[in-house]
Amino acid sequence: MVGTASGIFKEMAAGKISLKDRVGDFFPAACSAVTVKDLLLHISGLPADLDDVWQYQSPGEVWEAVLATKPLYLPGQESIYSDLNFIILGKISEQVSGQDLSSFLREEIFAPLGMRETSFLLKGKRDNFVKTEITKERGHVWGNVHDETAWQMGGLAGHAGLFSTLDDLARFSSFYLTTASPLVAGLFDYDCFERTLAWIRWQNGRRFLWHSGFTGPGLGLDLENGRALVILASSVYPNRGNEAWLPGRKTRIDC
Image (tube, rainbow, N blue to C red; front, top):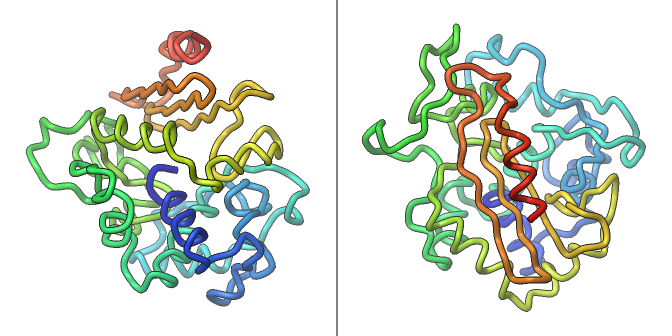
């Protein structure tokens, strides 16, 4: 939601993308009737991810597989948190902007907000990055995107692979907490399977947005009280499945 959703919202505000636009308006796909709104709400009906992403030999092959994936349900029938939704949104953003996703977000979102340490494919000493999983396929994943599909897409994908810091996420949060943007205000017009556009509606009836990542990070925005909660954690080191830290996270969110 920090990257791809922000880019989509920026293009919506500029009138370049509409919630009613269909995937088929941008490229041929098995989910051509799915709308931008369906993708943002995770009600497209697409499955959670591709099966066996290791079978693909290039980012292009992964993308072709995404385009060929058929929805499991009709749009709006079920809510499935699908990485494919945001992979497609990232590609829509690239097509509309004429830039790769990293360049577009850096110029239009991160630089204006002063987020100088937020990017895909960040370079630097490995010790500057949080350790993630020790895997069979890749060894110790450290300093590169953890998500397998994003890795197979070259580290640049709409659903995963964005690196950031506490200071930068504080700047991002401050924008949400202080902006007069009607688009941000309009997020609370949606409550679809406890979701709004790109975000989770944490605590129904309140102006509270939440999202988390598979490897442990989380971002909560309390627009009623002007507060933000940034969680930077690694729940997959040395291996996934560690849930001991979840009660502590929930306690902080509920404060």
